[in-house]
Length: 405
Ligand SMILES: [Zn+2]
Ligand SMILES: [Zn+2]
Image (cartoon, rainbow, N blue to C red):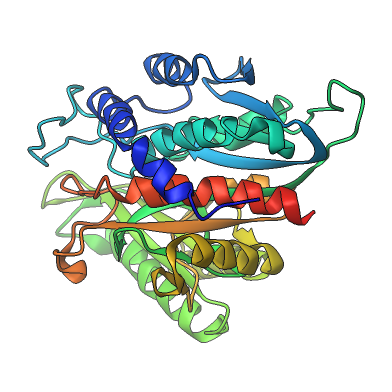
């Protein structure tokens, strides 16, 4: 099937894609309940030959395009949620919602996926199989993808004519300020990290700051645990199967002359293999309990499971980069040397269906990449022209996936 014209076709959709992206950008919503976003997506999809399922546990939308020829089903994902933070870009379409901003580019993902639905709908008659468009909420820590899976996202069943059409591939794009506009990057194997949270509470005995011997000060113990965790990471974890443990918060005390009873440490744990993910947890428990015991203090350690490692099927990742080269030219496609330590709940989909997570560059070519405000910054800026490339790549992935299988 012809894909060389997809970029031109996508360019014709740029104005309406920008308009949708800016509407979403002005009215960002958080978490799994995105009523206005859902309405905007539905009206943008209106008139397309899609079989739409509105999810009930979240604002997720599953839209199926059934082609005119037999074949399998391919899944394309776009996430729709924003972040709880103020926006300081000064753009004319800056967020109108206090304390909410599309700082991770999910507005662009949603708009591009709508564009891909239009491009692919125009080829419905020739399409050998189905495309499942997954519009998911709650990527930013709310597990939106898992909710959609639990609600039966992948249970599509047979086609109207009774023929089987299993889901055989899943692809997602994520825009990033770390790459020039329109570039694509991916890799086989672990592409993004797991992200778990740990909260360690050290309990001593409160007292007068002038008489530490009569109290049990939890603050130096907490500090020693923070230091010991870094040593545990560098001395027990294989550098070629890396992990990051960052303590992002220490909370203790109220004033200078009081020894508090407790100190609390909160951190994030990133890993790119399930083996190391488990090993680091064991290490944190051992170190925190050991340090606390050495000083006769009590410690309570709570882990909160976050997203698992995002693992690209090696064949699917190579395939996705080959398709991107075909659409955008070889110079615009790079194979990532390393995973990123960010996390993604598309990992839940990739644990069920072989596929690939790709990054799409969003920083304008005339800006210095090293100085560009990153994703999640209150000043992040994405070149909207990159959405042409994103729409073309999304569509090409679906077309090539269906015709190869
Ligand atoms: Zn994000
Ligand atoms: Zn994101």
